[in-house]
Length: 243
Image (cartoon, rainbow, N blue to C red):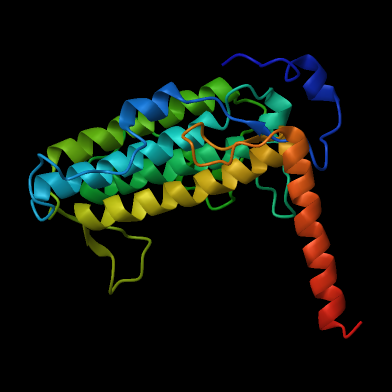
């Protein structure tokens, strides 16, 4: 993964800006490959058909995966790891975490374990939420791709009603189907992709996925927009205080 202009060695030693100028993310070839438009049933099997339901859920999972990993594009090692929240949220850690849980949900849950999983995969010290000094961004991305490939093989091999067991869930809900896990992981991935989008914007101003969902504004227009929202917030605060 290469560094973009302004994200090379200088970015590894410079401070992280509080409110960077907004930059629109370029169109993502990876997102385009899985489709970013709304799904259409025209010319397809009825939505109640299991194969169609599985394909739809899988497509959304793939889209959110691509959006999440794409947030690492152009970041230097320091930026990728930089914790921007009090709880330490960082882009690289989000990618590593999602790859980890994906490996478990589509692996051991359906008795299809990933060969030679890393030791930290089941650790309880939050080591899946950040990359250590012995790991690079490229290492984490490669691990995510391996996790995705393993998950896709499970999805392809099993029917939606295939049964599995999630041993770390409460006993009364731990028996699951592939259908439920597909929904769960699409939700999990989308949630963390949203986290990564905000973290990336706070790091260097890059926002959106290049899929047309971000308003087309210039940096100055975004600054004016933010100032407008801040002004509303200030006025609302004064009104609630009776001032």
